[in-house]
Image 1 (cartoon, rainbow, N blue to C red):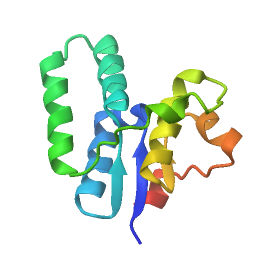
Image 2: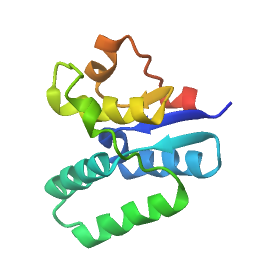
Image 3: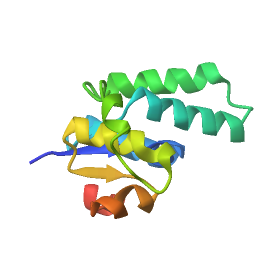
Length: 128
């Protein structure tokens, strides 16, 4: 069984981890999913902390990720957001995307996304 996994922005931000996660998905070990909102978040935060990396390069990286992982983008999840309660309301889009994708796993660095819903977060070793 291939797990559907939502990749949160915090795990797509660091290039080494992003590379491993995308390679894992491209090889068919997991069905990786993310949204344009998640994509925009990792790009925005990375560019904020590393202004030497041109936005054009970061957007090209995002395009290559989508090419490497067909059917990765989750859409039409926003109506679910308002019905979700998390300690940080800005994290609700991740959970909504996971629900829409029927994901079994959310790969995130933020436990608050998982705890109120009694979801299980897995270490990268589990996914690999």
